[in-house]
Amino acid sequence: MKQLDRLPENAMSSELRRRIFENNELKGAFQRRGSTSVVTHRIFSQSTYDVQFTPPSPVGTLKVNQVDVEFIPDDKTFGGAFCYRMLIVALDTNNQPLAGVQPEIERKPVVDGRQRWSVYHTSFGYAGDTARLKFYFFTLGSGTFTANVIT
Amino acid sequence: MVRALSDARQVSRERKGSPQRTSGASMAFIASESPAAFDWSGRLDTVNSFSGAGYAGLTITLTSKRARVPLTDIAITVYYSTDGVNWSEYTYARGLAENYAGTPPAITRFIDVLQGAEVEPYKSKYSLQLYGVLNSRVAVKVQGIGSDELEISVVRTV
Image 1 (cartoon, chains in turn brown, red):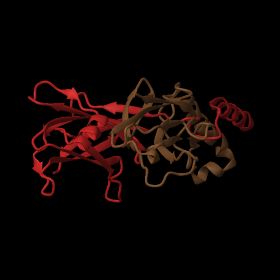
Image 2 (tube, one colour):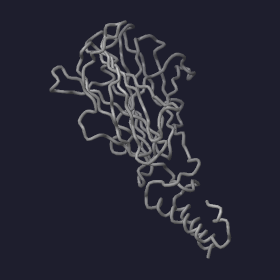
Image 3 (cartoon, one colour):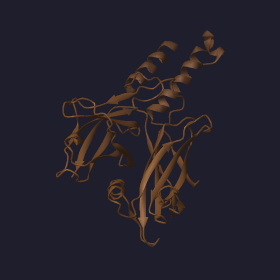
Image 4 (cartoon, chains in turn cyan, blue):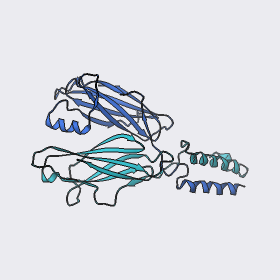
């Protein structure tokens, strides 16, 4: 806002200008003037964990566990919400954080507005290789997600 | 009159369904790709002096159309070819499995986000390192995902 906009006689033009910006955005135009902050979301399920990987047998067998994850924005009218980061917490069978387990996250190309990742966890068949994963999506808008274990 | 306009603005805001004054309830994302089938192709012909494996280091630069500081991420698809003519996708999972089993071409990839003060406005930079059996033929397709349209450039640096 300019200094002159504070004068009472300029209030209307200032008001109109702001109104025009808002209307532009209602039309779905590119955001011209971002506010200093945007509303962000952390989306996760109500479950303690979303997927569980069980170790292969016998011990010593290599298995690359894979789960494909998709974030689907609620409202795609204006292009849908962007998920900037997907983070994972790994838990053991007692639902305690699993030390030293960092599943690898690969971002996959967007298909049809769905933002996708594949997550890999390597297991060698030891009992301690059981991992439960919980997903967190940091997004600029609301949405839902699905997790699909690849067998 | 001003009052009426203010009221109208409030209605607009409510229609947007958001406490955000100048953006919608979601900040939209845009997925950008170059028209080319691959953004880079070549051989893993730089020798890693420790393991004898080959590698290639690429710098990926995304340039946004409008946003000075775009929020971005990249999705990489890697392709592999034995003859340089027929290409097929080489999955991340295959790379992991072959790397553990010692089966060629055992291509693995690592992405680093190069975000520092030296990265100019409108740009996002990433480093992609590809490792595998020496001289493997690989190609890379990049999708830039972010809060703006992105132009993609891939340069081999190592």
